[in-house]
Image (cartoon, rainbow, N blue to C red):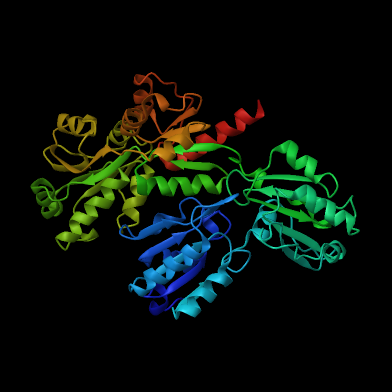
Length: 511
């Protein structure tokens, strides 16, 4: 456990933080704590997607990344920014791809801070030289093949009059050679190693975009790797690896076996929920493109919500129609000092397992659960519940269909409908729209995600993508928009959506 004093970034301190090789799941807990509490974040280009999402809304984010062949911000300017912001009493995270002290110039930055009298801390990160081979199924050491590993830069300081590397010694190194930033110099690197006596037939590999969704790996021999890399079109960022362990990939490669490897999937849910779904999809190997089409706007201050919460104990039946509704109802209850005990006199009904799960997280077990995430399914489940002349609360979104309250009213119930929130259109990020252009799949989780996404992107909707719908109501909205539904989830919740997508990807891949 981390003590409280270690969690928050302290004013006037600079933290040299490793963001890992790209996969957000490889960021350390300490790095996430600092990202979430820092006043200023100076970040590299290669920081993985989503890692900065945890930054405070008021934090200053500055891209100081370098691109191949150019530096958008000079190194001296980066060091000056760290000193200036810290002297202004702000906490600063210098967020670097991989590990700060492994070919990341973190040592230089630490020296600059020490010289300026600035307090700093170093937070190591997972380095690409270990992670990229691991994701490619290549162990950098192996009991039978390599008892040593050397990490080498493939791109030395261009101002040096001559190489500082002893290529002869590297050629004779009895273990695995891992080279960073060397893909552009690969022909020269291979030539120097061969000239130094390294076996031309030695197994070798090149890994592009290590640990990221689009990771690619080429295996060959030392002599043939440059040609194989050129033919495959591999580009930076890439890791080069030379050694017998590269042959182990044939048996241990695991990344490509994930069910959605190589697939790009657009997620259109509200931003907070989109991140949850995106995390699941990434875990299955997909490149998840978050393109939120809706935003949840609470309406908890309305008199209707206040009165419904105050009278919860008087309702015979309380119906929740979404996980958002369950969450927001409990938020409204908290403002009046109420908790799960308020449902003691009521039958609690939930549309779909997702809504039931959201209630369970808050200590309420739903008495009635519709099997499918539609009002008709909940009405079927409520068929044996007597509602005649009994007070019923339907807590839902403002724009929901009236199927449920109308049917309950026809059965004689005294129905109160309370809008806990409304869904409004979210304007997607331009970069996300561009990233979605070539997507393999677009997922829709509600009618509003369909309408709002099409309104936001217009003709730039990825027409070649296969559309996955969470259920029949959403599918109807897709068809009304003139689009084809390729996949509809049998279970109308996010888990069912993912299950249907995985099944379709397997079927398409088998054709």
